[in-house]
Length: 383
Image (cartoon, rainbow, N blue to C red; front, side, top):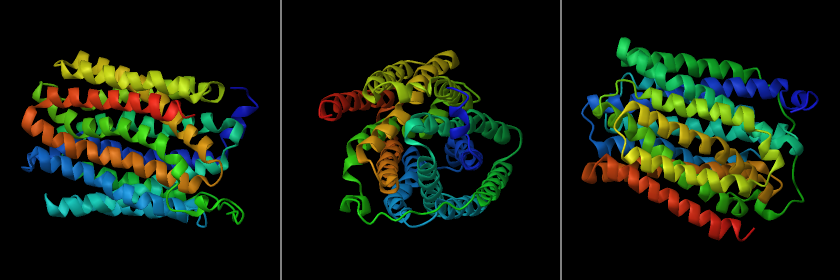
């Protein structure tokens, strides 16, 4: 990237959204390896854990299209503030809510907060980025999520191994309040009305965004299952800190998006997406036959490389399809993506209970095959 291009991307609001996103998703990533363990120690079954993990994304996906449409007329900052507040309240609520139903309610409201903040922050980044540098802007913005993913899981395991789950939830509260403070510092963006755009731009669902959103959804189906059950699988295999698996993933995401962000503006998105989809299949097959930490790390490296380029590529491809009004497009994209993340833990929880972890990972590999075929024959060919 040239020195002239960098200032065009790293504006004051870009950096503030980046920092707010980092602290916000830090809460999310701290809970990835720790919440399944917390629920398991309180007596929850695999099916219950799958539901409690998945309901977070299900409640998020229900709200996202409404948030996306509302962003046509409402400041993104307002939804980000609401999301950070909900994350703060639910962080405290974990201290008093036992499973199953009280935790379910907490997870629903936390998912709503996630929908508010994530949809609004991504839409804001798209709106303040020039079209010529949009691929790099999105890729660099995702580094906020990746950096928190690199630090959060291991920190979460450290907190529960050396302190307690109560300390974990208090840390989540502090991070949520930090995100709220940073978001409050954002400037107000002028909302430009769109009176003469096609009627679809004002609808709840952007139909043009659906095909590529399904690709993202099937990819995140795999990730959702991993977040729910890999920590338990790793502990069964004698690995004391499953957070290292997710930290390795995040490091690969950071390296891929920091060093390869420019590729998204230079090459066809379809040429990038196909090999990335193959990495999901390869990594899940390896994981199905892995029992040691080095093999788990190898899986995380392969998965992380593919994921680093896949999600930004699919997202930018979606924006190219829809043209105007990124709000509804982002609402549709993130909602359908959340559907995959929510169904992943719910469906694989049943598979784990009846067939065990190796079969579950092979089923995830099969999901990757289906996704690859869908993209090649139904998305890429039509384009």
